[in-house]
Image 1 (cartoon, one colour):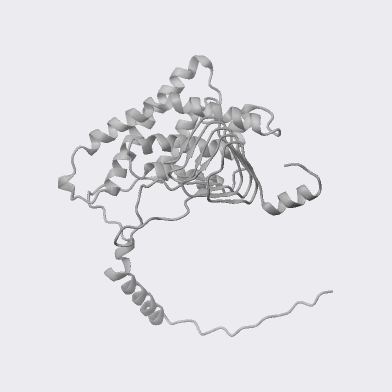
Image 2: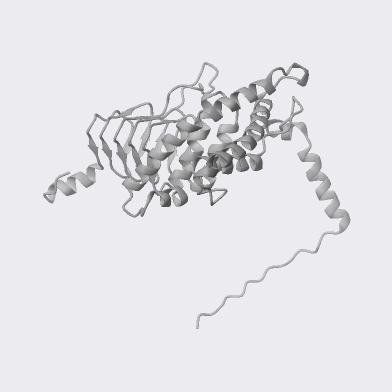
Length: 321
């Protein structure tokens, strides 16, 4: 029998009510010093509340119910009821999302309230433009579903990929967030993308441009940066990073924002697990990038890029690559 070691420690005497009050008062006073909270304090200059993550979650569930009728929300939707099903959800989404878009602008605005003009009308206009793009979003997602089914021999049918696969959840959020990003909506696209990130472990910036038939197998730990451009029929595995190599800085030493700094991945590329691809480089069409490689230079079309050690071992053993 394994002996159990007993640990003992001396317990300090319990603080008196007066001592506890003094400690709490000191903590409150320190936290209320302007120098302490200046860099982390959000002041609603326009008077509007912040965007609501809870409301955005409802919006996303309603949009998933519209894009994949019968899978989410109302589970029994007949073809005759599709129009009612779609219209009722989008009516609610229009009202809720327009308010969140308006709050997003207020969140990013540093003007006094009396100088705020036109945000309500702009939010309504952009929300309608976003909703008009949903047919194209569904078309892209349908191609992603087919890619997931074709690319995974474990998938029994397309419905399994819609209902279960983290890749489809992440891409649903991304493709919706990307449309809002393209429309110039503040912060809401990032909220949508981070909702999927927290659920799936797949981190796709809403600015990334992704073509049709995109599939991330397994997915956990995948990172796709803001200025990535990904072509059609691309497949990634878990742990792939499409990131930036460096951040150019201005004369004051501050990072320059908005420059293309992430990879371009052309059509029909496969990137295996753990690969890290950094900088504004191009992975040529039809290339296969092996697992755990580090890529910082352009890769010609049709390349098979693997770790040099693995290549040496396989060639010595008479195996082709």
